[in-house]
Length: 149
Image 1 (tube, rainbow, N blue to C red):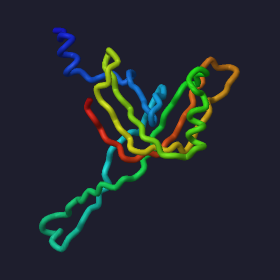
Image 2 (tube, rainbow, N blue to C red):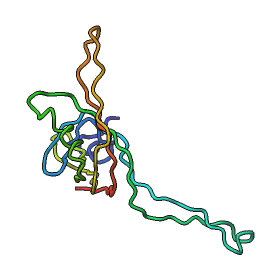
Image 3 (spheres, rainbow, N blue to C red):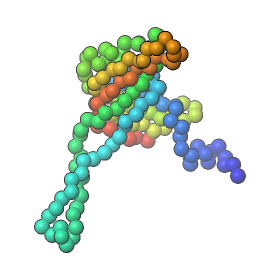
């Protein structure tokens, strides 16, 4: 039996194709973003009574940089050199990736406190292909948090 639209909106997973990216104060279009994660370093701690009580795992919140990959189509009307200019500037910028619902309203966000580009790869050029031009930007990011809007 089919569920109502209101039920599906609350209980079905959101599709990932509808998202927005904000870098600093500028809205930037990407076709794909991967590698966003929040994790903590952990260490297995052995104390004097480990043979009786077992080992314990300690977690540490360290603000380490993690790699993120962003892909963007080259569009002449949308600042085509923005990613290259950011790579040359080598400055840390905040980012926000927001997942949107079917109306385009932001419902969930991943905020990145600081991101810096480390690599910009040009598309593969081939005269026998009809693919679109996609640039690949690799970032190092830290301070990832998840926010429900």
